Image (cartoon, rainbow, N blue to C red; front, side, top):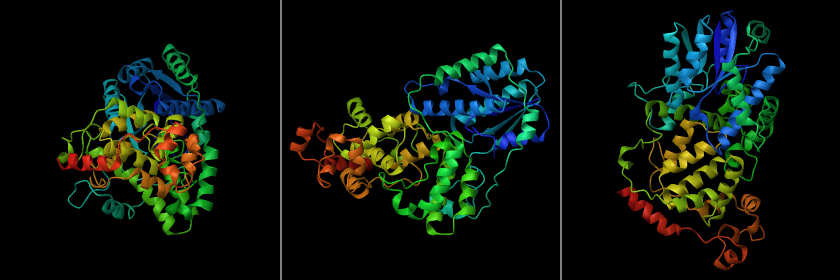
Amino acid sequence: MIIVWFKNDLRLNDNTALIEAIKTNQPIMCVFQINNPQLLENSKSQDYFFQSVQVFNDNLIQINQPLHFIYGDTEDSFDKLLTQFPETKAIYTNISERGYGLERDHLIRKVAQNHTVDFYGFMDHHLIGAHELLKKDQTPFKVFTPYYNQWKKLAKPAFQKVDLEKFKHLVIQRQEIDLFKEGTAKLKELTENIEQSFNTNLKQVRESYDEFIDNRLEDYPKDRDFPSLNGTSDLSKDLTTGLISIREVYWRLVQHAPESDAKQAFIRQLCWRDFYNMVYAYNPDAKNLEIKSEYRKINWRYSEEDFQKWIDGETGYPLVDAAMKHFKQTGELHNRLRMVVASFLTKDLLIDWRWGEKYFSEQLIDYDSASNIGGWQWASSTGTDAAPYFRIFNPTTQSERFDPKGDFIRQHLPNLANLSNKDIHKPNDSQRQTLGYPQEIVDHKFARQRALEAFKG
């Protein structure tokens, strides 16, 4: 028997581990493990992920091939599983190359060895793996553009269809034992009270992406920075859970979109996923430690009050506040707005980037550890190929430039809706008092100088 261990690869088609397991012609048991480090309170990221797991399992139930859920400490869960099923010959899974996922894979590899079970891990989440593309001296890239110039020359892995009929023939039906009953009960507990409903329908995701390629791709380079426009593919959350594979995204674009600068601009964004994956793989402490060592002793402010105002969208800067209120409600945040609010937290408020990274990790429904860490170290000027420390976004200028008519602000700050297109970016004192909108938490000119001095050391 082969165990296929599903994680953030919630699909059958183009699932490398599953396809390789089917090739063995051995009986297959599909397993998903729920462990305590995944479980958080009031987490949009968790809600979206486990709702996606539930939908994936529901789809499998429809073809009479449900997942087997196990719950608890990761090592202990798999030890119990392999003890319960001594006929297991191997575990097949799509592995991570960095962070917690890498550590977890190593742990289960050891558990498998203790049971004389083979462990086969497959690179599935990226077009180019973290260790596949290095500089000529065999050291990792530190700057994106040279990495991208080499990345785009490499052949990309093909999209693979699963042999569904063979899978149905090989897969083991639900085993009604206590180990699995506990796991199924835990999934129900995690999903039954989720208030927000997320779209996890693969057919709709594909249709939306095809519509983007056909109708919006050519405007992508200019529209993608404007949060009030429908200018992006909106695929990041689906790549996070593995609802759709990165290979399908890449080849659907390559095969259906005519050659253009816009097409290359979109492909360049796909490359950023691989770049940050590589950066985190070679800088395993990056979640807690600045990659640029010269910025490890910045005298950050640790103001709980200011941090909470940032979270709640009460900073007095309309675009920042609209973005954070929208984020708190939905778990989604446009990339331009991520840069704006991250710059505001780390430069205007001079609050430790790790606070922001942690909050995003709990709330982003498209949370990817490498991209999130990379983004925060970029915004705070502390990471690889980061913005220079003296690049400090003016939140009002960003608002005027990327939400010129105030459409996004009006949508999420209705109390400011009747202000003029000019005033909505920076209401005066009288307007703030009348409309119940807070004063600016800090003067940007003062904050900018404070940040420059902090980074200069």
